[in-house]
View 1 (spheres, rainbow, N blue to C red):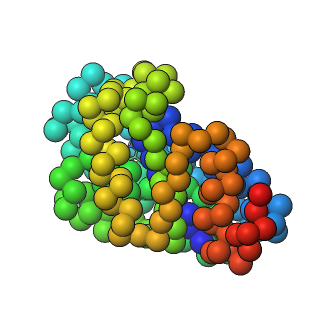
View 2 (view 1 turned 45 degrees about the vertical axis):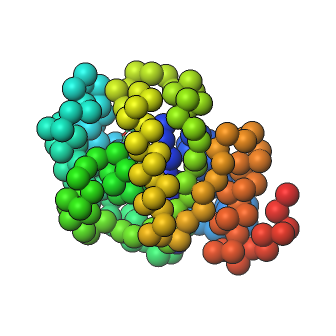
Length: 192
Ligand code: TYD
């Protein structure tokens, strides 16, 4: 099972992944968490490049698109481990939402693993920007508005749930568990 968390920055993905990991582990599943960009050499380069003031320009976005795709290839073995539940903080769907053009991004991610379930932690851009540390060039309203719109359209191609991430931490966590439960043979009505 490969479950992917997506959403604009500040939606609370990492906190919610940890909560879901704890709950699934308690329910007897072998769970592994992965994060994109990874801590590989390519991932480190990506994090450096994200600090550039020109990171949203076309040329840097294209370079980043290629790097994100390369970074992703380095964790393919992990993602293909069928004995585990893999919870991923982002996936190639982030590239489809953040980088462009979308058809080219699809091509360069042709070997990326398809998720079994996408959890889109959705929130309005204003709340997201207020929650962010603002040290990332992608964390500007105009850019994130486009990314949010892209996400809402893109998830239609996958098994997905759109989770309202503006609710409190506990409500969001329950909504996520209810979305995941049917895939794990757990009764969704038993979750509170
Ligand atoms: P992330 O680590 O989630 O952000 P942070 O640690 O700053 O909260 O991701 C770093 C940034 O990279 C984030 O703004 C989203 C962006 N990103 C892409 O543009 N394309 C991608 O394919 C991925 C995986 C991330």
